[in-house]
Length: 369
Image (tube, rainbow, N blue to C red; front, side, top):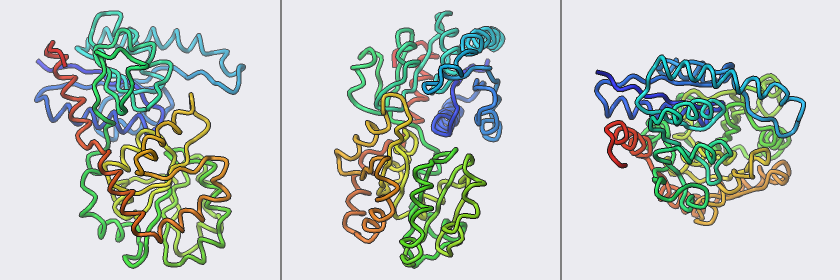
């Protein structure tokens, strides 16, 4: 008889790709397992999860809008409908365990599953958890975290330090540099800066790149992969910087492993997935935490690296004026690059997905993780 697991959450690549990594690790551990994803209707998981080979169902759920009260008028109705649909999904699928990876859909699903005394696992990616995971923690069987000191938010006896899951191909980038340079049409004789704005893109990072035409064009010993994001795809495709011979502008990066393999320096936000991938890949980075997140958790994520000399930090409000100049200074300092890379690698947890999958299997087998 197959084991049945629900994995719920999504909304951004930062939730989706770790969820898929957990699913892949589960299929490697269990010979006969049926995995059902539950996401939010209209979000990117509804496209990305089927591409990875898994079935997904959507809930009509949406998050609370912190900046606009009026946009929250339909929130109670959507939440009620999501809870009703989640109940039907759980009844029909009859899971042995449910895993919440963060994102809108994880709340209703884990709430329903927990009410039936079915084991649940929370995968908390950030150093400061969101409200949903704090609420769900009381019923959770195990809470897999990426940072130390999380007992201030969760019951200590439930916490398991696993790290954040990353795509498995990022574990093996060191032998892919030549392939990556060829794939992206880059020169092996130049240093490469990879700019990651996340799946949707970052306005601040895009404005910093767009406004630095003079610096980027004159630094012809440096080449750039600039991921402007799907939200800004049309705005920056004809930008003068995007037309420079040493700049490649992409709205989305399909082969992230090859992009990392090319990179001598990464510029990015400080989301949990980006930080975990940078550490597993052992890459130096400049982090620009987004100010538009709950409890400023990206700054807390970034500082966990900065305190260990594993990354540099530039505040969002300084990035447009200073980011490109600082990145060009750093890319020319080989000693600093090497030190940041080494310290980042020490923080990497390449086996996180496998470790979380083991926790899930133990709970299915009614063992204490």
